[in-house]
Image (cartoon, rainbow, N blue to C red; front, side):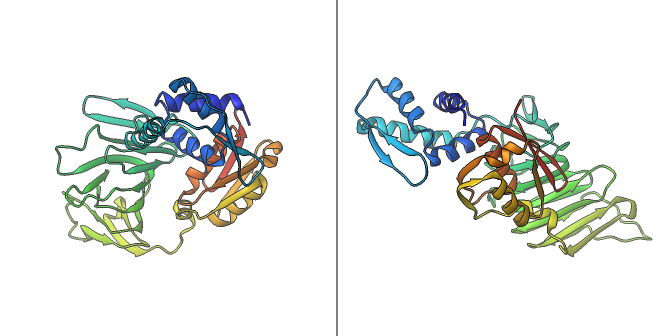
Amino acid sequence: MDENYYKILVKRYVDKKLSDEELDVFIYLMKQGVLDQHLQDAMDEELGFVESPIIMPVQGTHKSFFRLWPAAAIITISLGIGLYFLNPHQRSTVSSPVVSTDTIRILNSSNLIAKEVLPDKSTIWMHPNTQISYPSKFTGSKLREVKMQGEAFFEVTKDHTHPFVITTGKVLTRVWGTSFRIKAIKGQATKVSVLTGKVSVSLPGHTTSKHLPTMLNVMLQPNEEATFIADQDELKKARITSKADLLIWQKSDLNFENNTLASITQILDKDYDVRITALEPTLYDEHITADFGGKNLPDILLLICKAVHANYTWNGNSITISKNN
């Protein structure tokens, strides 16, 4: 592990410059206790207060260190962390935002899944070559409108008074608060697959063929999907028969205590039906202690890669981890 990286991460936290992904890494490392000394140093410098350290051992191979600070300082620090969570202000560095006065447009030109948090705290995970656009502010509008092309997974914040609407070509997906996947790749059928909640899929302004009638609106429950085949002028609803490519979005209950990357990838391969390999064999020997509860596979991969200073590339169900240059 690189102590200089920890120091830079803490400095970026103090300056409120962490991206959403860096904030996840910060929390992950903080839970392990490896940032304690760097946080102390930063706070000592900020507060101008130094006291003899109280050393408190914790389970594992490292120890957590805590200093005695004035109560007012602790309150200030706690508020600072809370405000940082409530006001994320930077997006993923793997996507390319283009911001106008009213609209934010993002193209994920990387080889990994990019995460974007919207103004209402809804989250979109964008597969490679996916693009989205949305208003810089949702306030003042009855709808929360997003346009997309490609493949993405959505976790939408509930707001029954302001429906969340995604436009993908001729298909309109309307939700209030749920999680679902949309595949709208050029030249392929558009598919909306629901994991939780309810979603309506419609074809607004669509003219039904007299020779080949089609449904113009379907309501989807969990484990159901809608498919629009443009060439056949048809919108179909069906049960999801194979969840293999949706498994990566299931929330994890995994936690590891000083496990090697080799053992962790074996478990992730089995749980998510993927194949994770390390380009450099030495990466398999890295030891990780982490609680991945409530995280999906893309978030888990991000935290692992940050912890061992690596990158990953995504190609179908094949994932390759390689060391940073």
